[in-house]
Image 1 (tube, rainbow over the protein chains, first blue to last red):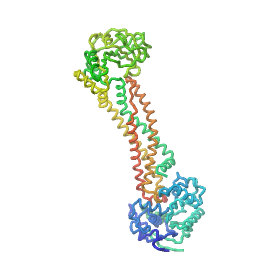
Image 2 (image 1 turned 135 degrees about the vertical axis):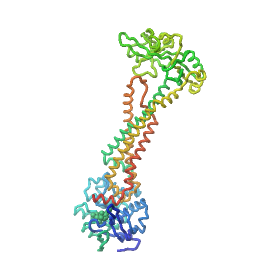
Image 3 (image 1 turned 90 degrees about the horizontal axis):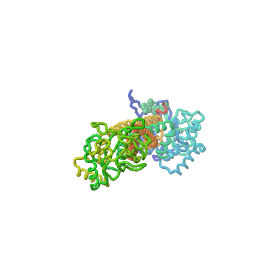
Image 4 (image 1 turned 45 degrees about the horizontal axis):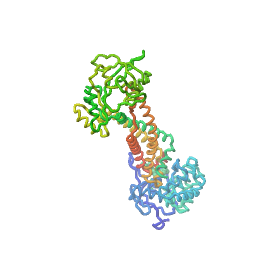
Length: 232
Length: 394
Ligand SMILES: Nc1ncnc2c1ncn2[C@@H]1O[C@H](COP(=O)(O)OP(=O)(O)OP(=O)(O)O)[C@@H](O)[C@H]1O
Ligand SMILES: [Mg+2]
């Protein structure tokens, strides 16, 4: 499971995240040590409020640990500027959200193109890559449709295509099937399997046992800690 | 997609909000533009009027306004002497009086009466008939011609009101040589003009040879001509048109400028608040989306630029609309203000000036920037993880 160092993407060492609240500090993640390697397929499970999303956000460099060290590609994320962290996310990490968060005024293709344009990809490359991605998620014929013209499952597929736009090494998904019915959820799960099969490391936070069971590695969290870990 | 294109999409996504913002800015911008036109309009119009008379220096006995102070004595001689000075093309003495025009059984008409001496040239332009050539002849303006149905060759009976102290002189009959246009005539105002002798005779002050002012036209160098006039008659006051305008803008016109500055500030503040509120509300509705874009790697600069571009688009579109609107409004307001009696017909309160346009653009651009500051700050400081979480929890 733990490959050679070069295949390590992200490494959390004794990471904690505490929130200062008026009623006193809340510790969402406690002393978590974890490594995600290239091409891995991991699921994080656990009761509501156990710190899954908080951990995922730290792995995705949108939140910083209040204690411990987070290394992305061997680099200490806390030493990076906001701009450098944005660049890192743009090129190395993809995010899929429970609520999709597609831009409603853009078409499916434009939504997928957006991160590529931000990364400075040439127009032709963007068009080609976008077509390829929409084909990959099975929406080749819907590229000119707005999110409002798509079903929930279709929106999530566009969101997955968008997350893959810049060929990230790591795809993070927080309850990607949370808003979908069971069969649509299964289609999304199958799509994510294909993403992983193509070599992208996958970390999925989910309550959905079926979705979690597809992962090779399942991390059970409780009270901010990784309580148990199982591998298939 | 560039920030501007992106902002455009965001705008048309909420057409009602965009329309509200653009129309608000258009209305405020129109008002602002009019305020700017008003602040200098009267001065500009006054300068234009004075320049159009063709005379750039006014000589009076004292600093008092013509007709309000003592008269220049030896008026014809003084006008001739001034006219002969270097740098001077023409000098004309003018005596002003009021008169009542007796009608054919109708209501008497109050008119202004001017008598001139010196030359060459006359401070009016003949439209029909011919110019005055001898005493006893007058030219009348369209105000009299229209209201009394008089024209060249007709006669009319005048009852002059010359000085407060003297007894009312008897009526005189004058012959109309032509119809002329006077630079300062007000709408419906009646003006008649002839030679200085004509007014002297009518007032029974023959031989006094007094004038209320002498108009001097330079050959081009106004200051040299004014200096020559002052040297010739140090007892008189020679004032150039620009000095008149300066004096006006220092006194009376400052009110316009102050009122316009205060109202401009109020309107701009209103636009600022409107755009800030619209953008803030819209940004707050899209926090989840913005946090998601940030998570996907869009830079802070980029999302901030989007907000700024939205502000620029709203203010830009509104600002463009505000110009035709402002001009229409100015024409309308000008018409209302000009219906005040006694104002020269060619006087305007709202006058288009390139400076005003530049200032308008600068003020609106500043508004666009300031209005975007607060929503840009919200976006810049957006905590990504917390926002993503709140969007799901709520
Ligand atoms: N921004 C925040 N401010 C304050 N408390 C927070 C914040 N984010 C998370 N928490 C707290 O940290 C704990 C873990 O939250 P987190 O969202 O990571 O849980 P979760 O496992 O994802 O739960 P769920 O399955 O319901 O999404 C919770 O007690 C939560 O209240
Ligand atoms: Mg969660």
